Structures are given as C-alpha cells and as structure tokens.
Image 1 (tube, helix red, strand yellow):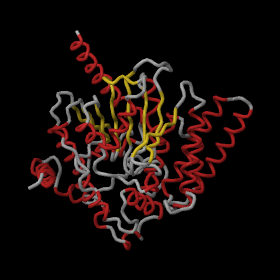
Image 2 (tube, one colour; image 1 turned 180 degrees about the vertical axis):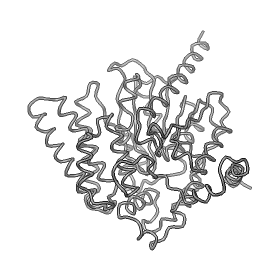
Image 3 (cartoon, helix red, strand yellow; image 1 turned 45 degrees about the vertical axis):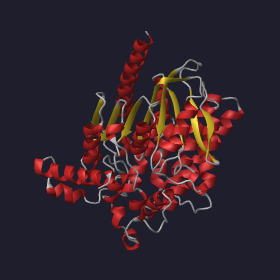
Length: 436
C-alpha cells in the first residue's frame, strides 16, 4: 500500500477508535456524516446558514478596520434571505457610500478619516464577492476595486501597508507587507496564508493589526487558486510547497525580516498548505494551523459535496450554491461537477512526522465536535515529533466556535501569538547559544 492509502485507513481507524473508546457515539458519527465546514455556531442574523457564517466573517473584521457594526447590520437587514444577488447588491451599495465618504475626507486633507473609510469600503467590495460567480462580468472589477482601495488605504498608514507582487511561473503572486514598529530593524515575521476561498485582502482584515501590535512584520499573499489567479489558469495545486518557497524567498529578501524568527499561520485549507510547506522548508521556524488538515481528500470525502447532484443543489439557497461553485472553480473543477472536488483534493496532504518546528493547531469548539476534525487533529498531535506542539480548542461559551474562529479574533490572536512568541523566543535563544 502507498503512504496515503495507509493514512486514510488510519483516519478510519481513529474515527472508529473514538466510537469504541466512548469519545464519540455512533449516533454522532451518523449525525456528522456529511459535515459542513461552514456551520455557524454563533447565531447573529440570518436563517441561511451560509449567509450567517459569512456575516460572522465580516463582523469579525471589525477589530481590524474592515467593518463597522452599524453598516454591517444595516446591510444585512436589507438582504433577501439566501439570495446571492441581493447580497452582492447591498454590500456593493454600502461599499460605494463608504468609499465616497473616504473621498470627501481625502480631498480635504483628513488622511486618518480617509484611511478608515477606504479600509471598510475595500472589505465591503470583497464581501460582495462571496456569492458572486467568476463568470459574472462584475467579478474581476469588484475584486480589483477592493484591492485598489486597500492599496490606497495602506499608503495612508504609518508605516504603510505595502502592496507587492512576486514573479512566479509567468504570472505574479500578489500580496501585502507591513513592517513592524515603522523601522528597518530585523523583526519576527508572520506569513499569513488563507484557504480555499480567500483573497490576500481577507488576511489583512483577519489578523494584520494583531501582528503589528505584537511587533511582527506581517506578510500575506495569494497562492495559485486564491484571489483572481484562477482567472489566469492558476488553480490550487498539491505541491503547494513550490509557490510557498517563492513566498519565503521573497520574505527573506526584505531587510526587516529576521530569518531566525519566521513563522506561518494558515486557516481553513491553509491548515494543510502551511504544514506541507514546513515539511519541505526548514527556514520556517514555527507554524500555526486553524486547524490541521492532514489529508484534505479525506475531509472533502466526508462533506456533502461528495454526493452532491444538481437536484440536491436546487434545495440550497442561491447564496450557498454560488459559494460552493466558486470553490470548485478554484480547484479547476467544472462548476457543475461539485463531487469532482473530492478527487481534485487527492495529494493535498502533509506528513506530521516531517514537521521539525514548533506547531500549533487551534480549532473552535463547534467545529471540533465533528469526528472528522477530531481525527485529523489526533493524527497531527500524535505525529509531530517536536516537543513544542499543541492542540487548542477554543470555547463556544466565549463565541469562539466557528470554522477559522471568524467570530472571535481576540481569542484567536491571543492563542496564536502567545504560542508564536514563546516558540520564536526559544528559537532565538538556541541561535544565540550556538553563536557563543
């Protein structure tokens, strides 16, 4: 048997071992058959589960200047439940109003005010894309509008949030960098990587401020499959370590980056991309995953997409249908062949035994209730040989339960950076001892 067949058999053994050990019941396995990664465990406004999850994602960006509570709930209140076009229309209209407010401030020299408006307008345009198909004539222009406004806002920050492009295979990987403390000294650095639905802009609004406040350089980038790259035929690829090497290469060209204190954090699919990159690249000194995706093929096979038909999708809202079609597109799968996502994720895996740096997986309590997620975390925790490894399950009673911890960035960032601070300080001490 090859290695991945053995891994998948091990996942089955782990799941049934949990049943016999009493960790989960057979009923829970049945309940979790066809689990939904976008299950919303903190109810806020919508009955449509996919819309509710997306709203939590947007509201979570409030602490990173991507959202204003009043604007978000006004917009949500005007959206027709489950309707993709209504969602797009209302977020774009709000984005235009906020952008216009920013233009007025900038014209009168009020740069701080303009910067704040442009940040939120950028994210509202991005929010509209959640339910917009790539075949929509407004898709690319809306994404570029979001990018242009974030670039505009970034230049009004001190130090600025810089837009950059990494040359890669006859294309470019677009991203953002903000240096720590506003000086050119070498600092610890966080490279933030998204998952199957993200744009680089998302990661700025996800955690950039928390990184800066803790003295980290912040860097994020679109990998093939993310952002607008699928429009160029750049889809997700199992050998993600190849484009990630280009990202690390770029990071280490920057004089602000301390090569001995370089960390990575990946969310959703990034929980597989980051550790896979670390197993091939020892320049990565610590990693965090939310959560560990040891074998994406197994996870996708446990989702509703595995048996999805057009007739079943007709029972979904247009919002949910569009979001899943976009995910298929990002993997290079025809948007009317949703089950094709399972085979498309073959080879998207990592070997925990080859992770030689400190590693943390964190997962919200609501998501962790799923037996498939538990199995992946157990394989990660049992397999990583480094003595500084951990699994943290964040609590539902603090509103930290969703996939990617969308609804509580404070608990998320506390967990991430407390771990990285300790891991990178230890790394620095070891470097000094060797030098002496």
